[in-house]
Amino acid sequence: MKIKTGNLAYNLSRSLFLGGGISTLFLKSSKDAYIAIILGTLLGIGIIYILSLISKNIDKPLNEYLKDKSLLNILIKIVFIIYIIFLIFILLIILATFLYSYFLIFTPSIISCLPFVFLATYLNSKNIKNISYIASILLVLSLVLVFLKTILLTNEFDFSNLLPILTTKPNKIFITAFLFAILSTAPFLTTIDEKITFKENFKYYLISMLTIFIVVLTITIVLGEMVNIYSYPEYSVLRKISLFNFIENIENFVSAAWFFDIFISLSICSLKLKNLINVKSSIIPFIVSLIILYIVNKVVVNNFYNSMAIYKTFPFILAIFMTLLIILLIIKNCKKKDG
Image 1: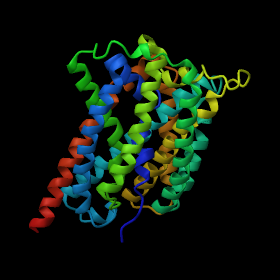
Image 2 (image 1 turned 120 degrees about the horizontal axis):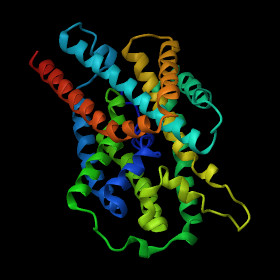
Image 3 (image 1 turned 90 degrees about the horizontal axis):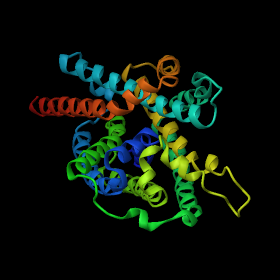
């Protein structure tokens, strides 16, 4: 029976863009980042289509699909587990650095991020439908917040900041488009065994990409040539909001949509990790996440050079993992048909 969980695509495709994701786009393509997003979305749709073709041949949850102790199955499972752990690592880095930079600068990241890990672990004790139900509620709130912050920023708009167009070299725009496609589709692999149709993923992916396009375009219109100097350009732009000229610091509220995406993605990764290692208890994914959070707190958050090195390289690492897993799953599907 087909599980209607296509709405998860919205949160998954947005979850890697807080801070490092969006700032990477601007560092590569500056004011032309919104053009790269259009090209990257087209490439991302192609990747999602390939994943949907693979998904059609996966008729069981991955732990059952890879149950036979063949060398190929063991290899796929190992690579998939490492991939999910790496995704959790990146998600916690994004969350921890953002909280440390703007909200809880005197609080260790292992404390500030712990509620997210607890909630994600609790949610993974349910099933994918429960996570999808929570995600559908958060999706509506997220869209409202995107609309709200765009409206509230209209007083800061300067459309002359978009000019001149195409000042970035074409090769840089194409590299940015590639990075955007990877960042927006990499988390989709976690739901490859959920039999989500291409049509469902396509619909929510487009909605998600539209929100990111609006965010990036808004940042460009407000900041212009200054888009490259901020680690968290959207949050910096949101600080300009003053509601009715006396309500300030509203950026802390309207930036909540990014937390929704990270929370849902952490829940999905935690659930899939539990399924792949074939345990019923959520304690092991919780311990794994806690260990990762400890490493993030000790090695990354307080070290600028380490965090920058990770932000510059993780999209390419994700691309390697994605390519390897796609190839391995295609081989697995071909062998299954031959058998």
